[in-house]
Each structure stands twice: as C-alpha cells, then as structure tokens.
Length: 277
View (spheres, rainbow, N blue to C red):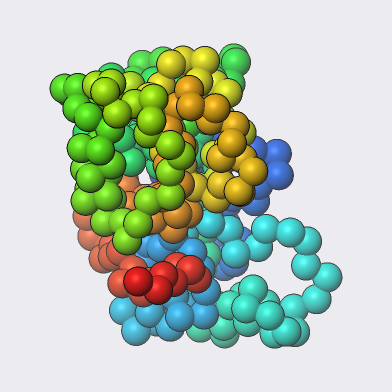
C-alpha cells in the first residue's frame, strides 16, 4: 500500500518543520485530502497549470513545490488568473499541492546548502541565525542545528574573481550573471562566499560584516547594487536559476524514505523570465 499525503507531509515536516517558515509565508498542504493514497510525487519549483498537466501525465497525484501557489488571501476562485486556474485544475484532477518554502530556506542543508554544494563552498554556516532555534538530529543532520537565513562558507582553494564567476556560471548553468564592480577584487584571491537563494538583499550587511568576498543571490534592484560600496561583489544570478536545484534536493529527501513511490523532478521550465542574447 502506498503512503498517504499526510504520511509524506509528516515526513517532510520532521526534517523541515512548518514553524521554521517566515511569518508571511504559506508553506504546508495547500490543496488535497491528507488521507489520499499517493500514486506518485512530482517535485517542482513552482506550481502552475503546466505542472498540473505534467503531474497528471506522469500519474502523480501529489506535487511537492518550493513556492506556494497560494501566497496571499483569495476571496474567490473563478479562474480569473493563473493562481485560481491552477487551483481549480488541481482539484479537478485530484492532485494535491504541498509547499515547502522559507522553512526549507531556513535550514543549513536546505536551498542554500544545495547552492553551496553545486559551487563548491565548504564549511558552511548559517549567515544570519535565528536565535533559540535548535532541532535534534534527523536523517543524518547535525545533532544541534541553528536555523536562519542564508549561508556563508569557504572555497576549497583560493581563486581569482574572474575564475570564480566562470565557475559560478558553469556550475549553476547560468545564461548570465549581473554583478557589481570587481575593481577591488581583481588582485585578491577569493575565498569566502555568502549565499541566499531567491531574494536576498536583506542579508547584504551581514555578508559584509562577515567579510564575504562574494554574495550570491537574486532579485536585486538597481539602486541596491550601490550598497556593495566595493566591499563585496554582489552577484544576481536570477531567482529561478538560484533555486532550480532545490528540486534535486527534495527528490533526494523523499527517495530516502519512500522507496515504493515513484518520485520525479518536473521537466517543465517554469521560469517566467527569458533572455535575449
């Protein structure tokens, strides 16, 4: 017998509790009956109509997504926008939707830990810790683990600023990197790196305080780039691009526990941003 939705979500919440999410967030089961038996799980970054279609085609009746499709209050569900159409389609097709968002951002082995793994950052620590948050060892995680935003760590060996950018572009499969000036870093060997997947400008001061050479994040506004003040190199790699490997992270989490359920990473590109070269 396959597990139920509630068994899947209970497992995920044993690793990444819902109380680790930010107060504005809406992680958890958003659509579906917790008692439904799961035929398959599709893991995605976003949930939009095409993801529902992919889940149906692959006989998956549960979507585990990073971003919550229901984020702000809904006063009606009539299909007037993509959010409402996605919810309607999921209900019609009997597909559950579970979101694991800022709670996954806020653990060291979560979204930012995956980015660190991809680009070779070692000895990682939470960049800005939330005080009084600890959890016991679960599924080979640390015995005591601080919770908070972003991570900071070091490269295995020092490299030049341009070599680091080339490595970042290659390892994260980036079409381009927006970054601040390298003029104070051209002759410096790069060692310490701060990371925040998604919108991370709120962590810049902490990254500078901890003497990071580079800060990897996304969603920077024009005037915010000036805040680097040549003390650090800000790299905006794109929101989707910074978090897309979260799918691999969640697939790995789920496969450790549920061997008899088909677990797949979605193949649909949900990035709403395109680039002209």
